[in-house]
Length: 309
Image 1: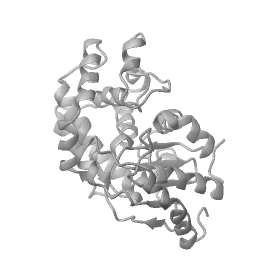
Image 2: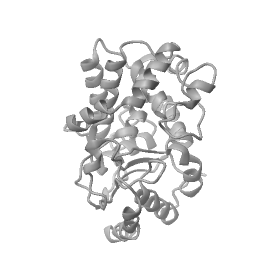
Image 3: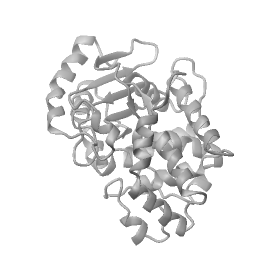
């Protein structure tokens, strides 16, 4: 068993909590600026055992960039690995997640990977459906299945706030459309992307998502296959190489597990064959990762020997 008792986990949260005051919430998205900077929560999902949680675990927050992993899984199932990677590369980048520079300097002009904004927008454009409503419903059903929570839904306030301020993402979409990386209506792609990012979850939901990826796409409690092993493998590889933005290399050394962060303060982790971890703390560092969440994961990685390396 990973976590021996509730008190132990609560002590790790208390140790990391003072880091919440050193970060900054993502106020460039107006709806996210309302977050409680002092919040910190963690859940550990270990199949067949009690799901230990500590901190403000009942708090709901939006997936943001964590949704990139889930959209990639859907796109890979929809059109296959070869077709997806005709549009998106497989290489990490040392640039910020919202940088446009590699689109201009690399040939062909396609995003380096699906975990940066340009790549995620391209992935979202590949999800099949006759209209945006159908595409969103398919993605939402997929997330509800993974979380085993039919109440997971889109936070419309956050989605609209992101859509109204997505100027840089619009620029990326038009640039990629010019170079035939994406097709279709840019506003429709942005609408779907911002709603995908605004899917609302809890730490327990994130931990459950992490556990499904940790067990290669199978429900860790029933052994039912939710998505193919190869899809899980590809997604986890990107989580290791690109999941923590341009801090992914440092994270691999200090924590050493597949993980994906979002600017709402969430971090979803999949410890292969063992557990899923969900973390929430909205105070971010300069690279867009949860500051207290990162410190908490470093502490847990050492205590529970989580590193896969």
